[in-house]
Amino acid sequence: MTQRSVPELSFAFEALVDLDPTLHVGQSGGGGVAFTPITGGTVRGPRLNGTVLGGGGDWSVTRSDDVTELDARYLVRAEDGAVIDILNRGFWVASPEVEAELEAGREVDPSRYYYRTQPVFRTDAPAHAWLTRTVFVGLAHDGGPDRVRIEFFALG
Image 1: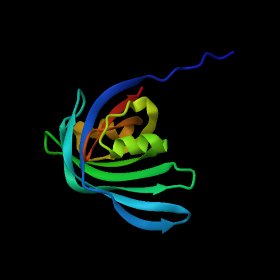
Image 2: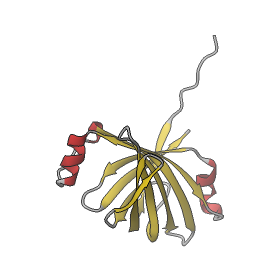
Image 3: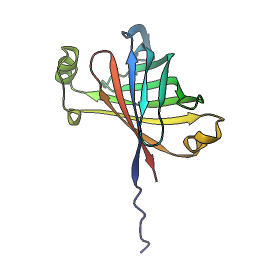
Image 4: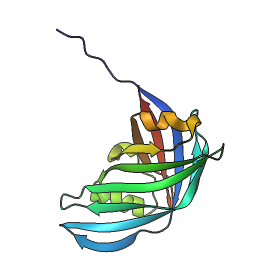
């Protein structure tokens, strides 16, 4: 029998992303379409530090099974001035009770919802090329009013 390799995750950085209110776009293909503007934020961690630039956004589709497919696109300016493009796709799944608690501004234990992403990075900055050839997993959390917190883990 062949021994299986067990992948390891290592924390790379965290993004605190500032958001404007979500805009309802309409219905399409059986799901509700929405857009959440990204207005800024910060990136901090052992492998990357910088600023989330305003102008990006998260397009989402809430399917008939109440799973929300996320498709965010935004830019980060690293501390060295390099610009990094992020395409961050994933899923949000929560019960109606959790949704109501979050809407009411209550803190909710992240184990009560599923908020995961698959980020892909693009940049031509040599210091950050490692981002473009590494697989990442994002663990997203409610970051408070008008903010999301995403922890980025590199798959080793």
